[in-house]
Length: 422
Ligand code: GLU
Image (cartoon, rainbow, N blue to C red; front, side, top):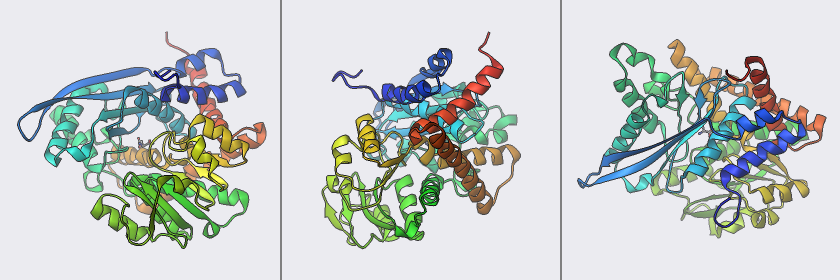
């Protein structure tokens, strides 16, 4: 519990999986194992800043589970990062990779830092020193970081280069897969950059197919216009959806007729946020949740969709593009109101799916075409949704419970076959 008596984010994440575990009478020993991260790595490392002063940074890498394969998950650089958040994010990765049938476990890393406060040279030194501090705790067949909030392909390029330089000369070319989300020139995959947003769109398409609704009949509000929110908004608008509102940390903009999201993206690249965008009206953040839209896509931080905000939402569907964006009481409220929620571990799995494709390409020293990546991404997203929908019908449970049940089935099957060491 936090000082205010509230559940911490990690406790909330554990409660989500326990809820599903209750429905399938999960064996207590598996409930016990999956309630804790396997390894928690905390490193303090010094970096010399441009003005000659020295600052010590604290970085985390939480390795939750690796029964299905190497630990896998992003690295988050954000001023609010703390151990509890990274623990929760690591656990969600275990269930996400299991749900979409990847041969990976779950992990997450983080650094409490606002990258905007540092020069490019300082960030490069921070990333190199963090990588050095993590040392052999990461590796292409052990633990494979990727981008998350506040990190990018540039971060991954520096990380890979540092790791390669720390390896003995004969291995330097074979460690590219130590991270995914690299730039394509450095060994990344085409389609990785927009993969999470594309996976969110495929989630929406699947729901449309289930409900016999056309994509071009839907209006959408998007919270967050970073990598995930902006790519999703552009792809959804291309597919005919009307994007009525977009919010980010600088402000909220709305346009009844639909925002030109391609123009908004250019604006954000130049100005750092959606505030003052000329093609829409500025409103208070709270108004985003009360817009007259069919679909709400939270694509920012955790706990953004509170019960107060949920009470103003009049649409039919929430797609959790962010990790953990809906508070537990908002989830209960929305489900009671008949609003459907496509849970985070399903909705935003597109990123780690294409990370897997990048890792495979690095292992085989091949480069797939965009069509190959996209076709296989769509297949894996579709199969996971089909399984979840089947489970929802069979057990009359929520999509979130169903997603956890599908993931738990895979994890438990492998535990049963391998047994618990010794
Ligand atoms: N950070 C992303 C996530 O939360 C991607 C992780 C990865 O590609 O390993 O799913």
